[in-house]
Image (cartoon, rainbow, N blue to C red):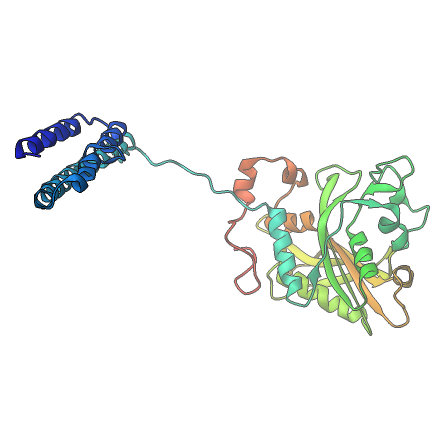
Length: 357
């Protein structure tokens, strides 16, 4: 093959490359040059048919042509990549003079905050958290808790029943969690059970659905002194006061004997309730020593084990601590209300860093 022939082939190849306008045409032309039946590939196949004297010169010219075309194609590919990048930059250009996009940071609901606070306090003194279903049966909600058949709490005007037989219902307290826990495990028990509860009631301080936390401690030699110490510790930590006046008033609950209601001292200062001081009293929870019949129902020997239980309204605690005067606002889904009373989601309450910063 003469030099003129090589020059012609080179010219044809370069003309093909010049006609490349996009990536598709690039791939097509490259295949026509270097593919299995491409121009350069076919030229290499002819090397074997040449005599030894012609072969060396032919191969040298062909390799030179191949390297030259390869470099031109590589540059062409780089140019296409740069064009693609420039196109994306033009399309995705950000006008930095525009105002930034506003964003909304959610808040933790006071009920969730108080549950976290109470859980943090009781976990420090060895209590664990247990949960149970909102839909309960009559046994766990009433009978196992020593509630008589004629007790007013069983009436339809107080309890949401889900069937005519009055077997299924929406739990009226979280005490059934205590029964379930004691039936599936062996003593000692030291638990709290926060959750939703339901009763026929609705006004400024009551809601058909509300939140309650109940505690249970069963062990050998547990007495009323342990109950008083536990609740005094809780009240002082929760309301974040060094000193607090507390009194136990005799009361009656079917599942505890003796039973008591707990009041804390307070005074009105600058139109606000100040917990811990003053000569006024405010009821916050009910408590007592677990009734022997309840222990028998869960196959725990009341002569060997004793214990105490208590129950407190989570919503009521939130209202007292954070100055919220209407329970109904808790469930109205008003974002303005939550913005005012809500809490920073990253500020998790602990006894060491503070509960309600």
